[in-house]
Image 1 (tube, rainbow, N blue to C red):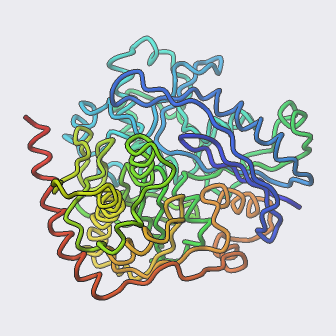
Image 2 (cartoon, rainbow, N blue to C red; image 1 turned 180 degrees about the horizontal axis):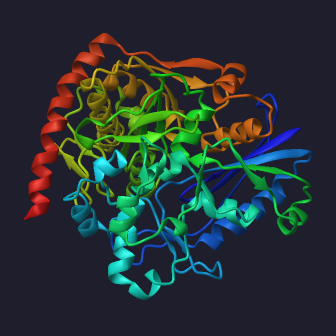
Length: 477
């Protein structure tokens, strides 16, 4: 039998089909618009996701499908009325409008209720924003769901979510895996408006007859799915206690699996449920591969970054880049800060600046790694995935900046691959995520740290750390 994994991303949906051994049979992508009605706002229409997913599944042309599951962009606020109409466009994970609401929530003991502090990208601050700024829409809310859960609802009619994705709403008591009554009261919603909680590999139902007829499917099981980072970790085999995965996608994440709930360090890291039924620590930076794409396409107007032309300057580049193009989440929780180049001179080249972009993202990820190490969690090696991981130079820089051995998986398809594995488990192909990882995952060395470069980057990182406080003061004027 075959299995389908769907990755509902920010720029488009990626869909893959695999057999029971994890071999890729087919893959397609479909795009949809991203809207920014105001500076710092980011929205999409949920119906665009559904239509793009159906188009992609028709193009996938796979037969004998036993199961399907979804990995999706986290934190987005999707609200439906009592007739199941979408009330307003989804407010996405990288939307910064809820700064005031976030600050308010962080005056309350929300970390006690949920295990995490409030970030502007989370769902609860967005709910408060709608309550304050669009009261007519707020009063119409019958169902609150996350992006990939909208697809699950359209495909099955099941109003459900999984614990990994629900962790990013700031409405979940993560440690106890239940909706927080305190947070519901603060946000002015009831538990009846929230979806049923399930494990990522649980079957929520089967594809509805009307959808199945569009695709030529019959009796296809749908697994609950996971947030994109948890799904990607499943796809990379990051399920054993202490295992680490770094994702260089639109955003950048450091993901560390844990058998037990871990209180985050100074609330700067996220402590979420994992798609394997356990937990994880995660640090997230808002601009990773997207920062490099901005540099290549919008600034250079090219198809490549030029960074290889300055590779010999790695570790001693006089130019630094702060990758805060959309503000920053971990560890600063600052929606107002923006990116910057520092150290420019008459002799600065485009190649140096291109190299600085790669190094700046690596330094920002090191901020997250340092927080994990501060709490005594050893991080000595990591798998790496995402579009940015295709760059040999970037992998080398990350290995040196983070002082980590890096590995890539033989099959690296991000959240879509993890979603397909969750579908396999829901259908009984494998018993657990660890069972699936032991049978499917294969790795190769991507980069090893060079001691001399590690030392050079240690000194550069101290300079990088000193820049954010200066930039914060500048934006506060």
